[in-house]
Length: 315
Image (cartoon, rainbow, N blue to C red):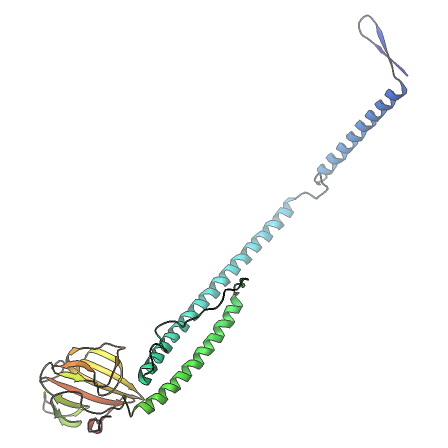
């Protein structure tokens, strides 16, 4: 095949001879070019019609709005989940605080039982955490989830209730049995002195009128020792109107004793007292006319005549 090219200048012409191979190559190139133009046109048409180059529909304004609404809804759900998690943690924290307070009371009761029963403090030490241990496992366990923690705390709470009830029963049994021993209220609350006023109605030393006297007075020398008539726990130590400096001891079983008008208090609230221990010194604080100790015996919150307890043979 011959292709003749005619120039503009001087009318000269050139002849290009194409063999079969060159003609075939030129046809392939031309066909490829045409296909490329068709493909580009198709893609441009897709883009104009609202489709991407990959055939995926383009994000129209409505689609963008829908996705934004979904994202906002998911954000609100995440915020609600976080709030619920915080509330659950607050509830767990409050429950753990209540359980810790109850455990402290159990420890105090257990310590009191240890003292009352005269058990070996090294064997039953309620002031220290229990000893734990064991071999280390090669595989680490998974962390507890919140629902599991709630179940565990519920079981622990029930166990604490059961243990508290058991200890209270044991405490009551100890009190009943120990009344004949260290908790046996007997004797006088002084080491030296004399009874200056009995229990019952008397003439008030300040106004001369008939008045009720809820205890027994023992007069003596200032700074003399005031002793506990039985073992127990101090529930009050301080100034009280009319009593002056007062010590009140709970002996269990509904019994407690009071020692008033003290000069100096030698114990504090929570102290575990032994029978015969010096708890204060004699004075004249409060409504008093001179150095003495006002001694009361109470049963279930009401005063009773201390006479029979004073006359008891101390064991």
